[in-house]
Structures are given as C-alpha cells and as structure tokens.
Amino acid sequence: MRPPSSWQASLRKRWLSDPFIQRLVKNSGYLFSATGVSAAISMLQGILVARALGVAGYGVLGAIITFTSVINRFASFRMSELVVKYVGQFSENQQPRLAAAVFKAAALGEMLASLLAFAIIWLLAPLGARYLAKDPALSNWFILYGLIVLANLISESSTGLLQISDRFKRIASVNVIQSVMTLGMIAVVTALEGGFAWILVAYLVGKAIGALGLTLAALLEAQRQWGRGWWRVPLATLQVHWRELTRFAVSTNISASLSLINKDSELLWVSFLRNPVETGYYKLALSLANLVQMPVSPLPQATYPELSRQAARGDWGNLRALLRKGSLLAGGYTLLAGLALLFFGKPLIRTLYAPEYLPAYTALLILLAGFLVANTFYWNRTALLAIGRADFPAKVNLVLAILKIAGIFLLVPTFGYLASAGLLAGSYILGVLVCVAAFRLEVSRRQAAAQAVAD
Image (cartoon, rainbow, N blue to C red; front, side, top):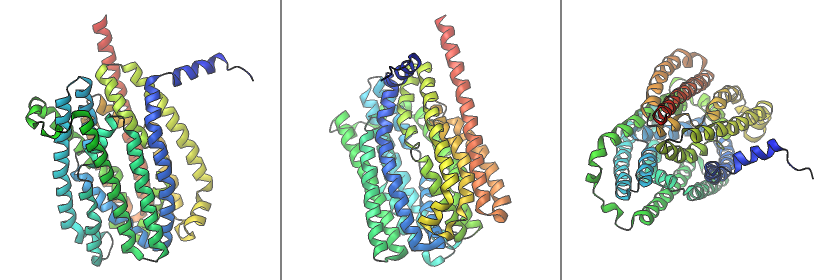
C-alpha cells in the first residue's frame, strides 16, 4: 500500500486535526444524518400525497401550509439566533444569570408572537381560502392547520439553546422522530383513502410532535445548565442590555419578514396570481430543489455557534478558514446533485409522481441555478450576525423585496410559475453575493484594526 504523499498528509492534517472543523463536522453530522433521513421520508410522503391529491389538490395543500408558515414567520423575531448569540456570549464570559435571563426573555417574547400569529391566521383564513385555494369553503382547514403555531410556542428559543449547548444530536433525534411519525400517519391515511382533510391533520400532528419535543429537550437543558429555578431569574437582570437585545431582535425580524417576500412566499404568489394547478407544479419543483438543499441546510445551524465564539474572541483567521472549507464542501455537493437532477429529473418525475407533473421540470432547473450559489455560501447571513451586523441582511432583503414585488406583478401574471422560479433564483444569487462581499470587507477592516493595535 502506497504511503500518502506530503500534500495529502498536509491536507488531512489541516482539515481533520482542526478542532473547529471537528466540532463542525460532528454537529453538522448529527443534523446531516437526520436531514438525510428526513429528506428520504419527505420524498416518500410527497409522492404519496401528490398521487393521492392530484396536481390541484397538491397545490391547495401547499398554499395552506405556506400561508401558516408565512404568517408565523412574519410575527417571529427569530429567537433562535438571538439565543445563540447572547446566551453564547454571556456563557463564554462566565455570566450564567445573564444567559438564563436571555433565554427566559426570548421564550416569553416568542410566546406572545405565536399567539399573535394564530390570531392573524384566524382572521385571514377566509381570505386565504378565497384567493389562494380559490374555494371559500376551505376556510376552516386554514384555521385547523394554524394550530401548529400554538405547538411552536417557544420552539425557536428552544432550538437556539440546544444549538449553543452543542445538543445537535437531540435536535436530530427529534427531527427524525417527527418525520417517521408523519410518514406513518400519511401512509395510513392514503391507504384508507382518507382524503385531503386527514392528510392535512397528519401533517399537523407530525409537526406538533417535533415542536413539543424540541421544547421539552430545551427546558431540560436549561435546568441542567442553570438549575431548577433558572426561570426565576428576573428580567431586570438584562436592564443594561435591553437596547442591544431589542435592536438585534427587531433587525432579525425585519430581515425575516422581508425574506418572506424574497424566498418563502413563493407558493402564495403563484396561488394568488395564477391557479392551484400551477401551484402544484411549482410546489413539486421546490420540493425537489429542496432535496438538493437539505444536506446543506444543517450547516448554518452548526456553524453559527462556532462563528459567534470565534467572533467574540476576534479569531478572524480561523473564522475565514472554516468558511472557505465549508463553501468547498457545500458547493461541490450541490453541483453534483444539480447535474444528477438535470439528467434524471424528467424520468424521476414521470415515474415516481405522475406524467401530469412533468411541467415542474423546467422550474426545477431554474431553481437549481440559484440554489448552487445559496448553498455554496450558506453562511452568508449567519456570518454577518456573528459579527454584529444583523442590520445588513435586513437592508439587502428590503432592496430585494422591492425588486421582487415589482417583478412578481409584472411577470407572474403572464409567465406564471416559471417567472416565479426565475425571480427566486435571481434573488438568491444577488442577495447572497452582496452579503458575502459585505462580510469580507468588514472582517478585513477588523483584521487591519487589530493588526494596527498589535503593531
């Protein structure tokens, strides 16, 4: 057996002996395993549901799920990101009372936001049924699925605490359990020909199990870290930090709200401006494109706590090295997966779903171009959050939202879901590249300032 060459040994040493990379690989490995299982399960349940409901019914289901998700995220302050940054910062500085107070404040704020989101869903359900599903009789189904918001009362804060505590294995376990149970319920419903209503209930129950599982795991983790009475820590402990915390939360909320227009409300625009059939085509295209993104999607979660720690220490060289390596891995995988779908996408759709879904293939190819850039620089937003620039992604999303809305009303009524796919891919490419450039400039500035102080 030939001994490894010097460059191979050097490469292995740089990658595998780096504790930063080791933690990233371990944590993302847990999430990647769960995501891989969830991706396979999601594809199976998607095939079952698409065959059972047909293109129009599949489109209506997508409209209901996206309607609830968009409203929930509109009211959300992305508390997971606030928890990761500030619980991590105070824990790093040996200030456990402040860390516990941040988690408590985030959980209480998220509870209020979830209740507000459910109230909005209840009020807007008749409009959603009329203009999105094109059937006013489906109003109650919009409200029924909206109950998932109440199950997610503090799921974001819970996810953030588990991330910063390196409990990625628990997150992965909960995700797998949720996926398996959802698939099981959908399989039973479709075998018994339960119809649209029972399929919707299966999705609702499965997601509720996942949300409650994350909440329980996080509460146990909080007790382990700060003791049984952690929740008694007064919020007044954070008095001198309120302005900073509020600014961070508002910035992430604005960014998330604008992101709803740019990335997360695709099915709603197509439902509103076109019809459930095109929504069904586009839902399938998004689902298949998301299979490419799924293995990469755990990386921001796994990377963000590490980026926050390194930024707090001012270790910019280590931070940039991690991001370069992550981009090589994520970009290489996405390119290979995209080529596979390019060549085998049509037979896949025809065989697994049905020939009537073949129009989704063109939209899939358009989406893959945007996902290649987004996956390669998966860290673009979390890196800016880690260095305290939560406002910049919000500003970028504001500009993109204005351009996207103009494009939607100009192009989607005429060109349908293909125009929506093009606008989404374009917003990914432009937004990601601008954020990457801003991050590089800011880190270079800080490195130069640190060097000047050292000199």
